[in-house]
Image: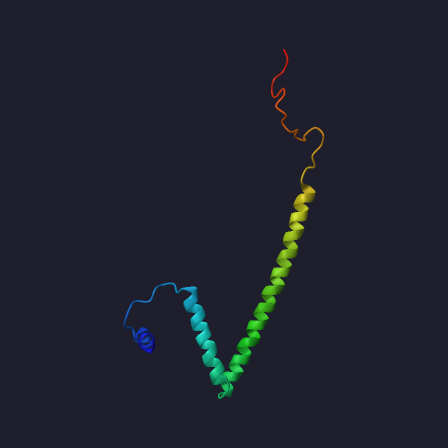
Length: 108
């Protein structure tokens, strides 16, 4: 596996696809997190940067959560407004179920 990683870094081997698979990106993020966690124990700069990064991620998640809650409330209000503005059926425009008798036939 190390040869494959070094080959990719040094430009040998297969060409890299334009878009990486989500699994590859998740694997790279997990690897970076593991390296940062390992280095954070012995390097105060890495520990500080890791802490700052995690705080920013928490802020981003909070912002996204707030946005989703606001969007949900707006969507519900929009749907309620649509229902309120929908014409209500009256005796004139209410469709009667077809019974099979006298459908479209008028007496002369």
